[in-house]
Amino acid sequence: MNKRTYFLISGLVFGIVAAAHLLRIINQFSVVVGTWAIPMAGSVAGFVVAGILSYCGFTLMCKENGK
Image 1 (cartoon, one colour):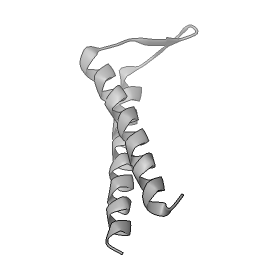
Image 2 (cartoon, one colour):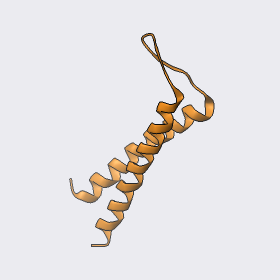
Image 3 (spheres, rainbow, N blue to C red):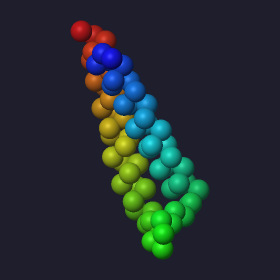
């Protein structure tokens, strides 16, 4: 696997994770693990971090294209 493919797959995976967090925020889904309810702030942080990582993956993929 070359770098371009790796960056593309990473960008897509993190983009899907960011979209899932965004859907949870918009639809106010509750997530409970055992007896612990995960706060909505966890999804806000997850959306921001996954969104940044997705952006970085796609940016690096484009830089590999321009080589």
